Image 1: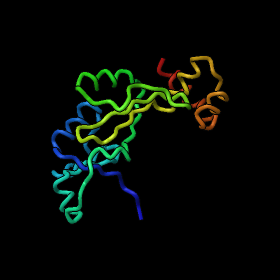
Image 2: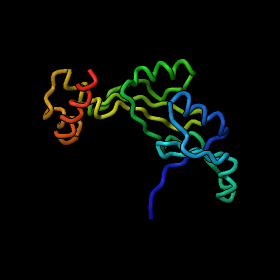
Image 3: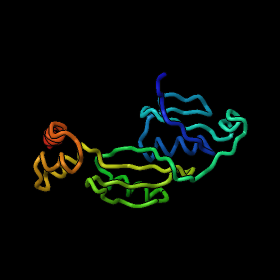
Length: 158
């Protein structure tokens, strides 16, 4: 058996596709009309069609028990874009106990979306705050080699 992707149901496929493409910058991999798969390997499915596929069982909205997680190197820039589009926030930018900065909000169908600073960028940021690779490794629970490579990667962009 092979795992393929998470799938969330949406009430308006066009509105949701626009949200994920235009606001979150996702690219469509496959478009089957009532089902759209994005390059990040998650899919949106038209709720009315999906309901037929599951014998008209009830589909709950805004259950807050599932989220799609994305990473972004400049989450503050994304937050401004989200605000400009009237997105409903669960919480604005906050720092997790492992120092990663994250924001959570709802998509047009009240599915939770989390966008966190990439762990690579977090390593770089913490290093520039004066922490050693060993200290960072202990905080973010990633191997020290990962931290060092991440710092090198972002140093190359300077």
